[in-house]
Every structure is written in structure tokens, then in C-alpha cells.
Length: 447
Image (cartoon, rainbow, N blue to C red; front, side, top):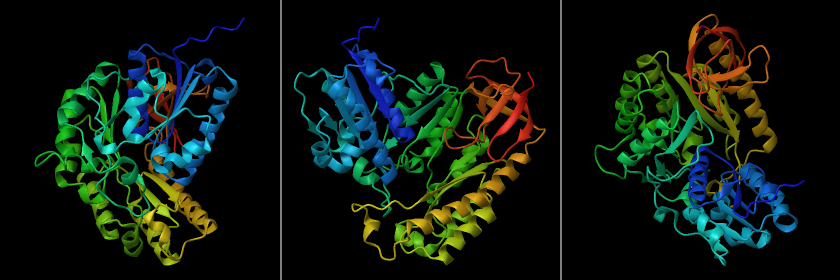
């Protein structure tokens, strides 16, 4: 006997980055407060919402495929209204609306707070893309349905002050708009009280935080206040700019135990010629010197960076500068992406585009080099005791529990597989490393 579908049931699919996820959790909280029932499967929902990503071509294709797949429930299923929101709508506008007529409502990044109204209004506007800069920032008391505990993401700002030629974010999100410091701290405190053992501060560029708030407002000061408000939670920040990682910031990270000694600093490239075409304001040596300064001040610091290969005009010589950087710094973690071209990017008109085949080969070469470096870092932990945050269950019967260390960020880095753990998710346990693989560690609990 089939179960009756609740008339206020809604299914939400969140695509893309951690910042999108934080937005989606706020939407879910608002929907729940308004009396909607959150469905875990689209076929069991009267309403379907997709919060899309439109950052690069692969993300665009993933979002469109997801929308088309879910649209089947609108045309031949239980769904009575479908809303597509976020970056994809902001980027492609009414062209997207014309190409997917099954969708009832399209909302840009500046209209995410209109999703509840889009479901309840008998005749909502089909298309809405207000200025993202005018969208109200979340308030610490706003409802939010946490979906990634024991980790919670907190957006500290919207938009970006940079103008990288390969990036569409300023167009999609607008200029930098930092949240009030008190709001961020209060939200972090509330999330910690609700079970967030790890709080990740996220933004398009976290180290730009406070530039628009006036003197004295910056990421270092914010981290101090969050760490004080949430003394039992692990605190991380992601997406730092190499020119804004100050001595003040590294001093704060070094001095406070619950701030992870982890620096995620995307440099994009090492060649000055490529960096200039990218619109990046730093030189290759600036970033390299920064990494060495961090390691000198905080020897145990974990370093992560992101690199973009195949950018227009990138030569073999330029690529070899990247190879040298990776081999010299020996990053703990590395993300390598191939350039994604589109007609609305400033970089689209640059000469000497690199073939996709060459870009893929360069990515493979870098990741092969990094695999050896990552394995070397992990081997250094063999037979040593480490702190592990318990995050869930694994499929390995010998190591049935999953966790992460202080030097592993969620989603992008490796994992720790645990045996002998009796503590619940969200606990921090000590474990001795028994096996080290390229990206993952295997450890036995000591308590």
C-alpha cells in the first residue's frame, strides 16, 4: 500500500560548494519553520527545489542534468511546483528559463530568501534575479537545518573583491559584503550548541573578510572571537588569498589550540606571466615565500593549495614552474583543475588556448607528483598518536568508523579509518596510526 504524499512535502537538492550548502540549509530551515515537511526523495515530494552551481562548465552540466532528471517528477510525478535557484539562474538568466519549460520558478542568487514564497504563492513570478548585493545576510537566529554534522559551515561574507579573468563569481554574487562580526560569532556559538564539533568559516575569499566593515575588522580578529565562543569545537577557515595571509593571522592560528593549523591558500599558478593574464595580483615568489614563512612559524601546519592548468597561453615552461613549486613546497594537500572556458569569461578572448588533451595531461602529471608527496606526509604519521574527529561509519569491517584529523579538511582531503572506537559521532578520540596510504590513514583507538 503506497503512502500518501504530504501536500507540504518538499525535496531540496543542493549542488556545488560549501557556501551553497550553507545557503541550502538556511532554506531548509525556513521551509521547516513555515510548516513544510522535508522529503528525502523527490518522488515523495509535492515541491522540488534545486540550488544550482554555475561556476565552471562541468558544474553547469551537472546542474542542468540534475534539473532535467528531477523535472520528470514535475511532468509525470507527484511534484506540483519546481523551483530552480542559485548560480545557474544568475549566470544564464531567461535563456535557461526558455530552455527548461518544466520548471515553474527561477530564482537568482539574490532571491534565495524568496524560495518559501515561491512555493506558497498561488501565482509566483516565474523569474526573479534581484541584485545579489541587496540580499539580506543571514541572521544568527534564523532557522537552519544542519545536514553535515558534526561539521557545520558558516558563511562569513558574500561576493568577492578580486577580478580573476577565469572566474565568474563576482558576476554571480556581486562585490564583497561581509557579515557583521557579532552575527557570525553568535551563529557559530549556536551551531556549537547544536552539535557542531567542527565549524568551517567559508567565503569566496575568507581573508577579504572585513575589508568593507572598516578598520580593525579582519579574519584574524573574527577567528579569535569564534574560537573563544566555541572553545570545544575545531575551527577552520578555507579559501585564503596569498596576499592577505598576514602575520597577525598566522599568529592567531599559531596561538589558539582549537583553530586548526591548516591553511587553504589557492595560488592558481606559479608563473608570473600566467598569473598576470589570470588577473591575480601576486607573483609566484610571493606565494612560495608565504608557504615557507608559515612552515617556519608553525612547523606542524598543513598546507593546501589549488592550481589551475591549461590556462590560455600556458607554455611548457610555465607548467614546469608549477612542477617546481609543488616539489619545493611539498603541499600536504593539492587540488588541480583544468581551465574551463566559456564565452562570458574575461579569459575567453585571450590568445593561445591550450588543448584539453594537453591540460588533462598536465593535471595528471601534477597529481602523480603530489601522490608521492602526500604518501610521504602520511608515512610520517605511522605508529604515532593523533587526534581524530569521529564523523561516521565506513564500509571496511576491520576499520568500521570514519574520522578526520586536524590536518584533514572535510570533503577535499583524505580520511582516517578507525578500529576500536566506542565514542559517538562528534567525539574527538586519540588513535595510533597502523597504516598509511597515499591519502588515507588507518588507526586503532587508544581510549
